[in-house]
Length: 190
Image (cartoon, rainbow, N blue to C red; front, side):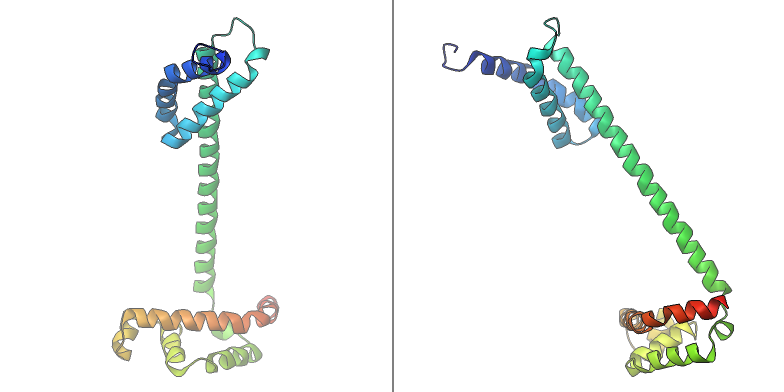
């Protein structure tokens, strides 16, 4: 115990922390761009050093050891960020590829050839289950190829109202037609 009643080892850690913490955090912050993350990295490095100091060579200079640990933790943080960014970019590329494929598939799709009489009847039944206004707006958009604005003007409603009806119809049709997807795929394939 020192003269203030604090264990000598704790006083040594407090001195080390007080003297170097701010510098170490500024260094880490330069690379990780997040103050709380920088503080966490420094605290982990200092705690690791302190808990393992007995196993280290007596020649080890504590600030140098901690600084090297902070550097390695910052590198690991940046590599993790780089990996997450690359993964995000891959997911975005995949989503863009999927969207392009969906657009190309729909552009090449001829509904008259695609739907057999049976499938056409299933779709008609699904459409007939929709409320009149919703069905009319959906048909104007999907089959009449009218924009939301054109439909809004014709139906004397807001564009948001048109969006609401299109979304409502799409959700309802997806729900109703989900059980017919295998039949549709079969008809498309053969």
